[in-house]
Image 1 (cartoon, one colour):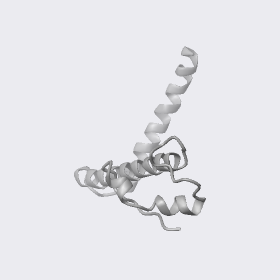
Image 2 (image 1 turned 180 degrees about the vertical axis):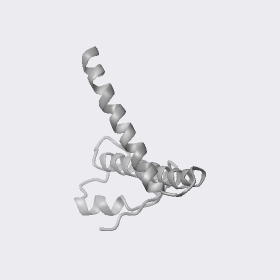
Image 3 (image 1 turned 90 degrees about the vertical axis):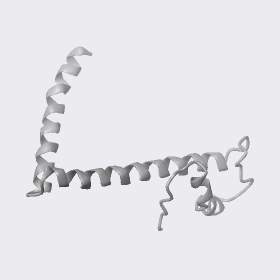
Image 4 (image 1 turned 90 degrees about the horizontal axis):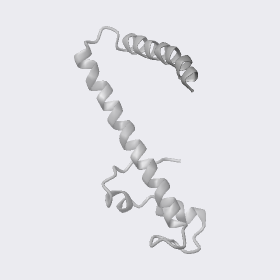
Amino acid sequence: MASRAGKLAPMLDDIQKTLWATADKLRANMDAAEYKHLVLGLIFVKYISDTFAARRAELTTRLTNPDDEYFYGDADPADIAAELEDRDYYKEVNVFWVGYEF
């Protein structure tokens, strides 16, 4: 395994250098102090999107598990999808609501 890790290190360094070079190109003439506000905003959006998706997956499992208190009986997939749109399920665990449009 040590040899494998040794081979991956240069690849990871190359990826990191490429990412930094790309970020520098994207921010162009923008000062790094300003750029951090954009990046922090994107990180926050990614966080709320990930927590919403995780909660939605958890609810899907719970709504279809007969042993769970959230079990929705013999509901069809359309009923489950409609139930997943209830914002209260997300608010109860302090997850931002990120509505999906289909």
